[in-house]
Length: 229
Image 1 (spheres, rainbow, N blue to C red):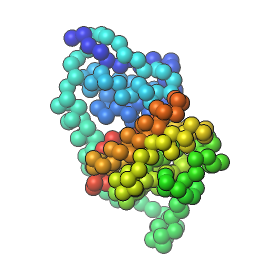
Image 2: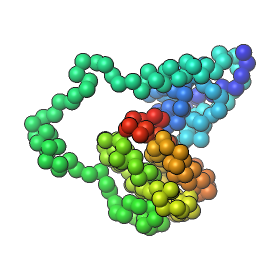
Image 3: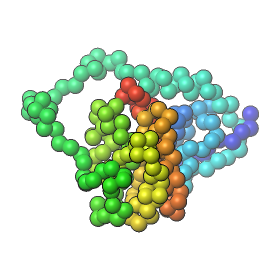
């Protein structure tokens, strides 16, 4: 059948992987350092990957392609989410020094600035210049055990809860993005509906800033798994 589907220009692709993270259907993967459409029937043609591509390597085309197969996509995503059954995959090996450090609770924090609450953070600060910005819902750090290493390392962190704070973060986030040299934005939210306010505020801020900045959304389940990465 002829339908709309994405096309990736390998010459323009810089291998950042943001499109693969943004694709909730798992249609895009990284092959030899380049983004690749893995299967036509995984691509729904909606183009969540387009706005995150920093080089304009992704576009829509009309061509002969297999129909979008939602059942196949769900089966593939469930397979990805399943824990690895490899021998020894449930445990990790630490050196005696690393084990002693972990047991003492002295594993270093990845926090690079203070304050971290969106309500308290300044609109302009030196640490924002050239920063990769992490905008996270409060609960994510408690739900995901390796939050510091996985999400905070190398980033400036801002956290909040739109349900508890009862505010629209989009205006302040807009000014932070507009007035500073932000390199990228990662939004981490929980799967619960109230966290949609955090994602919406960040997306509104990105749009209102007038800047083209790579961004991605990661969703954490209530039992601590990454649902969308």
